[in-house]
Image (cartoon, rainbow, N blue to C red; front, side, top):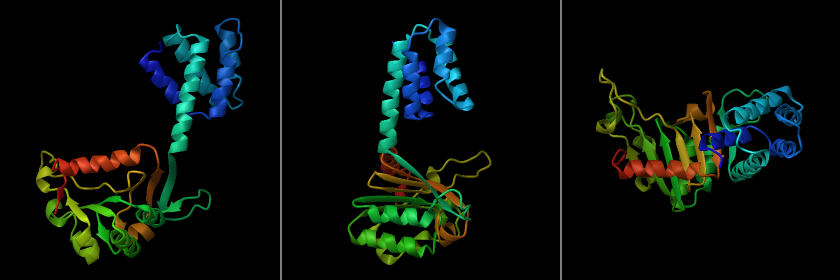
Length: 264
């Protein structure tokens, strides 16, 4: 049986390399070799790049030093299983960088407003959005209004002047279109639920998140403001599939259920 600490090593190693490289490593492990030095060399040599060879060498050395009782065939099988699981995860989940700011003309990045509007437009049942500030984001408000009209359950968790004790100067609810304010579930983080430092300072609602139907998740530095969508330098990641969108959605739902976040 492979010890749990080395299972973690295997998973981390597999996650760093293409599946084709793992297959070559497995094939090399299963070839006859006279002694450890010969086996180590023939496995390392499957990689043409020096950096990858160094990765393989470090992994093999940890195997030899910490779990020498694991046979070549057992390690090869464990690598194949881990590679299959990693490939399935990569297939099930896609990641895309999302950006507001200057274009490098080298790395293709999705615009923040486009990604957020896409999430809102794709929502069929449930939409959760968390933001520190809301101001003048006309295209976002229009998309939210359309989502409300087609019956999507919308939860907006926003920073408010009273709860934040002045960290935001304006009432976010007043910036929402009346139809959104009436149909959405508006949530705040009450002042009494926030942690305080010894000198009396309290936490702020700085998370910027959008989740649709537990299937698509946007995590970004951008608030729901016109500047964040057009002028600022903001970076985030759009996650489709996998378990993270549902986990984030459930996390905020639980915070509401526990009263840590409170409905207005």
